[in-house]
Image (cartoon, rainbow, N blue to C red):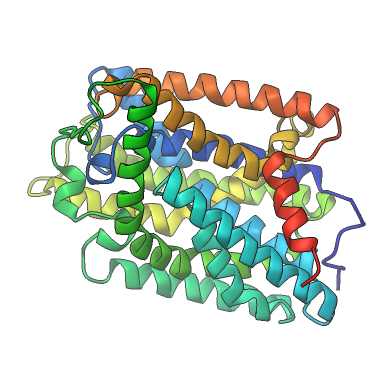
Length: 389
């Protein structure tokens, strides 16, 4: 059986590149949430032009759900690389501290910067599945797939999207009406920043029970699947490349399955007679959940099939934690500087601005990596979990 550990200081470039791609995609997907408060975040944005509609559709069928699923798979893999198969007490303690400190970082990140934080739910999910690292890989895959299917079914069983989308089906498809937090419309930078932080804290308190449950029901099984992939050797460069074509084919099929509903939601394809916006929203979220693992494996395969791009995106993947937190911080600072744009920014402007920020973040990661430095968040996290109990 392949050794699930990595050489000391060693990394898999294709995996780092896939993580870098995921961080870019997650930043694009989170942009609409950064731009408004929780109560408005799941409403369809104003899509005026055909170009905006096409951009939104592409985001829905290629990015939404898929890249979070990819991060979940890689999180499970990293638990093996850090903690081994559970037989080493020293590494077990290191992994436990790593997850606990990630929960602390996620708690602060969620309360202060981003109500949609996934770090705290990931840490909780990791603590739940950490004892399964020693399972045979076939069992990890089978149980992981079965648990994921059961989790999706539970989230969708009542015909609503409240558990995964944070709002009722009606709210998700209601016309977008921005509501500014009190005190944000006028004033200088510091009062606006404080108002945004206060509103974010309120939104996080409302969101965290539902986001945590959704993460436990979907991401925890994906972490178990990620462990199985490592134990089978499927994330090794040669093996991943050999299976990449199958993964890309599966991801392409997943995108095609999700495409018609997204086109209907964007008004680019007529919906069947009798289908309400609520029905479209329900099926969009359901198909997103069902097809997310296939889309995640496709993005991993893309990173493996394009070796020349691996050095381009791997540095950002090595700084994933810093980049993820940095996106939240930059969003809060940006809207504190332009409070009138919060809840009112045009979708095309928002995505263009987000893309520019992500390009700058990528460039900084390239320069940072050339110096051989760890990311600031990674360095702090590592220092915390490597310290003695």
